[in-house]
Amino acid sequence: MFGDGPVTSGSCLLVHDAARPLVPVATARSVVDAVLAGHRAVVPVLPLADTVKEVAAGGLLHGGPDRAALRVVQTPQGFDGALAASVIAAALPDPVLAWTGAGGSVHTVPGHPLAFAVHDDWDRGLAERALAGPS
Image (tube, rainbow, N blue to C red; front, side, top):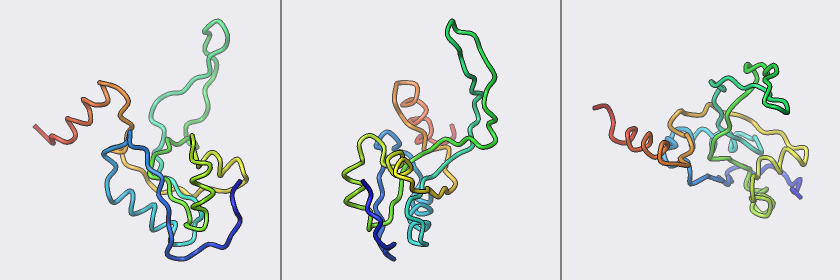
């Protein structure tokens, strides 16, 4: 699925989810910089803040995973330009998932709290308040 061409200096493809309209420019820049530094695939991430539990049939809670290694993945996702055709072909629904499924590794850079996804009225309200600034 993904070509194994050489890393090309100076070429980067960003894949961004329009549901994340408030991604700071600095976050996107850090993704681009990491790709241009030689990483073939890069994503911004944040540490997982919420508690996650496994739920068995019948709704009974089980133990949860250790959050120390868990991250929330954001966009934009960055790819070396040599992968552009493959990324575009695999972009639906998730090129990072396709890339890791093909055995590729993904470098991470720090994400930003403003890069949250806006999916519903609650999220839209948060985004509007963020844009309005301190009251």
